[in-house]
Image (cartoon, rainbow, N blue to C red; front, top):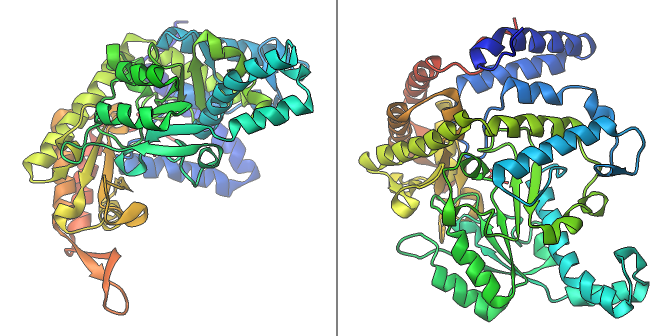
Length: 486
Ligand code: DSN
């Protein structure tokens, strides 16, 4: 029997696999089976533009739902704290092998449970590398386990003045890059680089000047809401000049790196000392994280669990291995290219209709729409779009007058719709749907009659009309075609 490889070939098998699995769940807790079934309906019926979400393949989803979940496996391949890990070893080795080959990395660590966890492993590793060697030397010790309490005390003092330079939140940086609501903001004294106030783009000379003055231990590049490319060669040059470690968080654009859309100066892997990512965004795998690094950091990265991580999730590592194998196929390069083309079409479509975009366009998978031109906050725009089954998320724009909660922007991403098969003409239609909703939306007032940043009113019947147009568009590109849970 030949192995089914296309979605069409897989559909009948996958359909019965999911249906049977839900029947088993239903026999114990029917409400959970129903919620899982309804989630498929909701996802099928909405236009998903959340830049960090995607649709994993049936093979990825099914690799997670099984007894690999039952195994504890702290440690690393061949060196576990639990007996009986040979199959977990196989899974973890294959996932790491695919990751190394796909990204051209010296070393891959596939245990992190999320992007935050991957970043924590990276922070730990950079600190460990910086302080361990001198401490070991001072103590005449060979291994970190030989360090005395006093050695560790010195190490902690050495950590006291560690600094991190990363992109500011309103320019598109991420909470885990040294901001207060995340542990990184407590571990590091943080300073941010923003973007140029006129172009909205990274000004590398400004980053260099900030690095020279601040002398960070870690320079972080990477973003969750910046619609342009980052030149990692220049970032490495800056890091080297000030003796910093260059860490790149490629969670958002890992799929574009895997798909060879981001190459040369724009591929972080050859330039960074350490790269972190999630596996579920543009990379289209299961929810999870991963760290890639050069061999100098590998030993520290591998101590991620139990240093900062709980036990690995073998079922998720299995799904990561499947997703990484998918990303090594030539079709994934076509997918990555189409993500960027679709984002370009969405940006052009919005601009043609008069919308204002941060940086006036996009080079990657996302578009940051400044909704102040419609007289709305990001919160109002996000809610009005959701009424029309268009799922987006509000996002701050640079120097946002409405702050991080209400915001003045809406972030739009194309990885998910591209997975569904929508093309550039359809993304232009999506731009029209968004523009139509926002033109028909007005800011509302609070109960006491004051202007509100959250309330809004929409023209009568408009959400339903737009939702019907969105449904027509989606009907041409069914999600998980052939999967029928009835
Ligand atoms: N939550 C992710 C995003 O939406 O960008 C980042 O962590």
